[in-house]
Image (cartoon, rainbow, N blue to C red; front, top):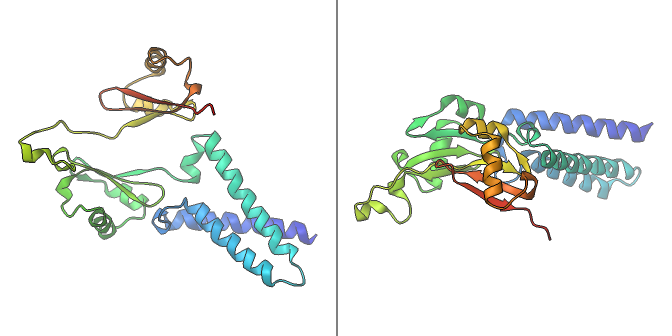
Length: 226
């Protein structure tokens, strides 16, 4: 049956596009999630075909619906299941930290050294010694934490030597405790539940986002009840 064939070929082409996107890496995307970007192009192409298809317009229409349903389903899955985000969107990669470049992480991110240098310059960092940590996000952008002495107010001008700062760790996301992150920073759920109780929360389900800094200070952002 033709409708079944269109649905199956649409699913197959979506799978192929997804695999190609993973192989090419995140740097092809800019700001959008890479699969959303590809799905948007495909839906646009199907829409153009729908506008010119006079004999069987339902075929590109079904393809558009299938691609839209795939994107919608992936959004729901990634929102409900934290671990799935690693496979659907990918995970951030630390490219540089404390003066050390991580070559293997650059290879996994399909990011060359020249591209990394270019992204640093675009962010206003022409000297790598000014960078404390550089993280390649899953949307293809580079996030940079400058060394303490090179922050906007430039404490070195006032002969100050501030303590180094580090990236906070997400320990609760959308009501779910991220056990692996807690273990990585040497904490556990018992400590987390005590912190929740001290800040007036009954459980992690009330929290939209919880982040912990290197001094074990927990910042909690409650879910919007409205």
